[in-house]
Image: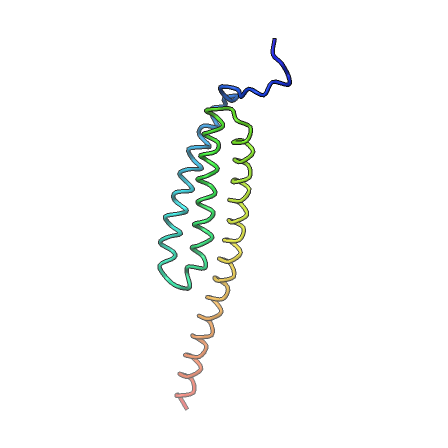
Length: 127
């Protein structure tokens, strides 16, 4: 008979094979985001995009590690920390995508301005 008020931790979490796979995938995606973020940070202006990628990658990797910890120990704190890190990962991805879209729009506007200036200068030289 188990005691409902017992505080002893369970030795293993309810196992779902997809949770183990998700843990591996989160760690892999996290590492890849970190690598791409570091490469993106090589340029000064592109660091604006790279830093949120690195932070999102760290959060994904941490979430994967917390999920692995939960699956091994059944610790509820690891499980709630997993969801917090996963939530932080998605928040950073939102920031990353907003910054990326703004930089793409500004880039297109600058390219358009540059080519308009070139064409305008070329047309003025025809007279």
